[in-house]
Image 1 (cartoon, rainbow, N blue to C red):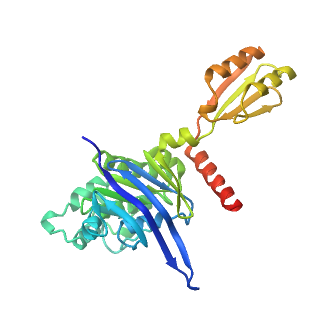
Image 2: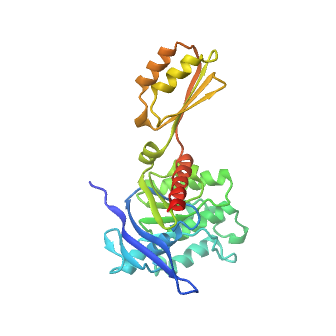
Image 3: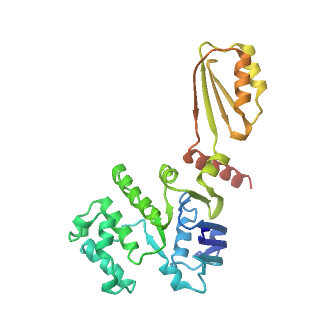
Length: 323
């Protein structure tokens, strides 16, 4: 069975009128497809446009132009159905401190027009691990528990799409991992997850598909593995038993294309930085055999999403400054 798209965005624009009557573009011609049943990461620095996209999808902000489709429905033509398809977990802890978790979830279900007999309050409390805190005041919950309660509130109408805006902001490592487990469990149940986060290691661990935004523009959108392979820089660190001779260094420099960065550390350690397409294992082994220097240690470093993100935003900044 072919997977459908959870969300399809075409040529999406959003502009705001400023005090001086000029227009500020928050989104600039964004086109994006989010597959159903995936964990999709929306990444970018502050002001990149992530929150604007989320607010448009949730029906909280009107787009200036463009097309938005949610589970096959045109958002402009079916706004109510589209809203019911999405649950949003905001970054802010918007929880009434005088309500218990059970009352909070029950009240949220009422706001969605769900009849009492059809509410899944106890089921949701169990799913987010707050069964034993059901009747405690929300103000007495820990930070991690409050985050889980926000997720519970977003699930009251059983939405097929869940948007998590910085769900682990300000949460310690142990509680962050607990939340990750909850998110993965929801994904395994078929929920499409859209995640925004500033923790790039979180995005690398959780997300299958990623879009990178900057200044309202889409810089890159693909699978995580594809982005790492296409844009990531690999490194090989080779330490020799003895210092490299001058002619060996010259052989190495002449052997590799300029796309490969070579660093000689004290003439006894060679560091190669490269894209996979620019260096074959066979060529590397051939050069090492040719210089006949005994190798003491050899290890490789795979690119991380953090490295890729920095590289993309750095290049984009350079392009912007030139233009």
